[in-house]
Amino acid sequence: ISGGNTQQEFITTAGVLEKGIFTDASTPNSFFTGTPTYTGTKISKVKFAGTASNSTGYEFNITYDVNGRISATTSTILTGSTIVGNSDYFYTYDSAGKITKILEKKKIGTMTPTYTHFTENTLTYSGDNITKVVSVIVLPELYTNKDLSSKSSIKSSFLYSINLPSES
Image (tube, rainbow, N blue to C red; front, side, top):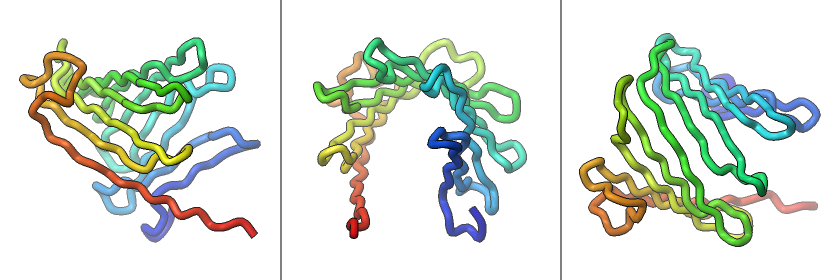
């Protein structure tokens, strides 16, 4: 990642992810490095640290269900060594085992006992590729249950188009 041209880089050894490096768009020539921890063959934790001074850091702890699918993720958001927030993620799968929804419940602040922000991401697929993500952000005063579709909210759609090179 040099010259600002590359947005991300993944480093593997024998097909096993060792770390991912991502451009930090908030600070020139700065990066986040994500380092996974494995339990057996599955990633159980990913810790992101930035190179900029006082950059935000993230730690994600991942749990799996009996089918080997991610069932929940908890994250801690840090500035330096100070916790500034937490998020809990919950996943919904279709019958083919693809993630169809990711619900994030966020607690902002160091002493916040209740969730303060909610985001639901609904994924649409074409084959095995994600082609669309609809994000619904709900303000705390509007959240009363898991059905975010009927609440007043902020809604964003992201369309993805992947052009893979043809095989020769």
